[in-house]
Amino acid sequence: MIQASGDLLEIACDESGAEGEKLVGGNTDVFAHASVQLDLGSAEECMRELRARAPSPVTEYKANHILREKHRAALRWLLGPAGPVLGHVHVYLTDKAFLVVGKVAGLMAGADPVPGLRLDPETGAMAVALYREGPRAFGAGRWAAFLDALNYLLRARNGQGITVTVDDVFRLVGELRLAGGPAGEIMELLWAARPRVTAFRARLLADPQSFPSLDPLIPGIVHAVAHWGRGGRPVSVIHDRQTTLTEERVAQLRRLTPGLAGLRLAASHLDARVQVADVVAGVARKIASDELNGRGDAGLTALLSPYVDADSIWGDDRSWALLNPPDAVMTG
Image (cartoon, rainbow, N blue to C red; front, side, top):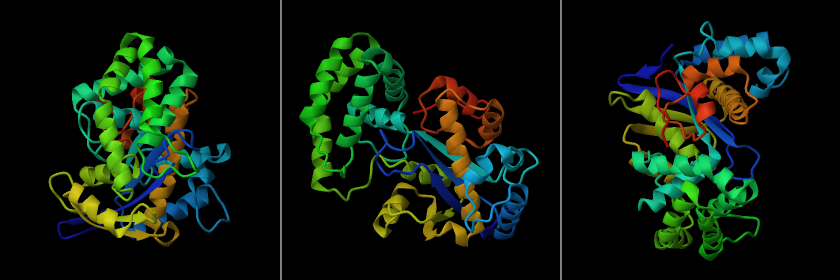
């Protein structure tokens, strides 16, 4: 079932929940990136079996077809131990709000928010503390406003005619410093880090085409290559079409990811391997989002957990304890 050419390994990838660098106040709160290591024949057989178990007349079969309650048995078959993808699919999850917090923590620590790279333990612990204490210390409304303002500040293109300045953000930070406790202490550190935030924002404005620091697609690809390329094996990626993945960005990705031998784009309905990745990514995003929001299905979460990358970007300890593979440790 593994497709390889010499030492080169080929994987197919797709995502669910992509909204570019808009991570707060969008349509989804979780991003999922799935990578598939199947040969074309096995992937085609998987899609044929899915259609047989959960029939639909649509040309392009999507996750929503097997997420329907009446097709729950098909979903359990797909992810279960007797299904076709266990051991052949890897899923990288991103809690979008935590990604924003992690990027800010990285700036406070004096590091640019580089895509795909892990925070050091101390900075990661700071991000987790702010993520968990912030809503309680600041109140839901001010916490949401804080995340939204930071999201706009750390992306070059905001659209919608919205402009957020460093002054705007730090007026809010000045108010939040008064909260006291761990969250207030972190706001004090952010207040002191204003020169670094200002410099980062200036670089964004000077080069709006720079590598997107907040797009979760980038770490998704980086970690897919790292997972399948363990031991130094070069990995070639076939990815569903994404406007983010321009030729220049792919070249940047290759510099960031030594094991990435190449990346080409393909429409999911034209390659069954990409279609399997599309379906699994959609299923994973819905299961993970439900768990994050306290409405998870314990059985489905347990079925998803063996697929989940232990280095996924996740800050909520309760849901992560259920989504995390056995013996994995949560990271920023």
